[in-house]
Image (cartoon, rainbow, N blue to C red; front, side, top):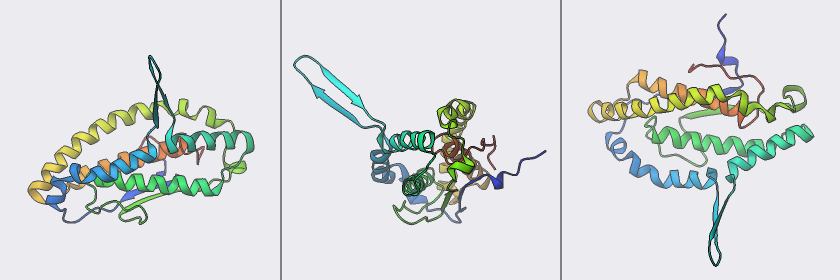
Length: 212
């Protein structure tokens, strides 16, 4: 029996562009650098170096994204709560990341906004923790999601290859081939569902192995 993926409590989509700006696409890597650096500051681990008389010691944290995961997991396990304010922050942070990703991978010509949704749709349902979430699952979701992580790793390699092909197609035709576009968006959709399950902890419904 086929699964209706449209009912999964996660929505991700990107509006298919008409004509694509060839000049913007040609310089996309260069023009993406400022916004990618900004996103990396928010999501990458922080590293501090302390130099003593004879050695240097490095310590790393989890960054904002890692801190949100740990805090949310602890809150669900011990208090069965998911505060709305940090759900909203997590959602907006991931929407921003999705807009940056869509721009980097040529899915849109619009430079990523830190506020406006633009052509990228990313929605997660706010959970009722006591009703919808098992308080102990956050301890093992990362383990249960390992098959997804493996498949997504392979798919992301394919996305890189597809993006290179699409880049050449855009330069010569001014269009992103629809089949390639749908594949890249599908991988983003799959990744977002896995993130909602194993990282953002907004649902206990196991994500489907599907691009649709």
